Length: 137
Image (cartoon, rainbow, N blue to C red; front, side):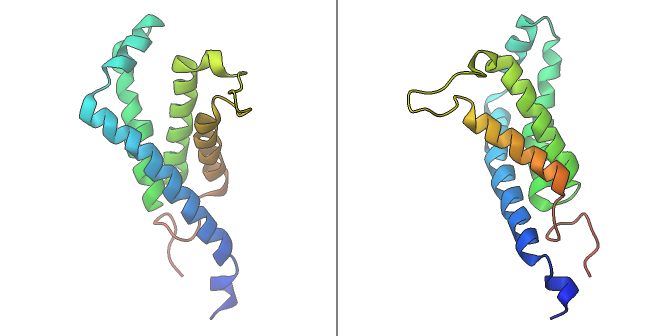
């Protein structure tokens, strides 16, 4: 095998695993929004004095972004949409939990934090070789 082709195979495989896990887990949230609607998000936005129509942006961060991340096409953009979605979710729902630990010593927002920082890692690293963003050698 050509050394250029295998030089970063472990790193590219790790990026693929990260992309698939992040994308699939966030996409489950998006599918739930498609099935059950976004009325609760609209209400939260209105409570902050924002137009409820902005709730439709959740589809960018929980459907489009994850799909882009999973397939590795404009994966950095998709990961950015996920990161923005998580920041908004923390702002709308979890601001009171930012500095709170659970009874077991974990951060109350560890799941949201994991999604956010995994998305930021993908924004910084890119999708790796196993995606559609770059031509195949």
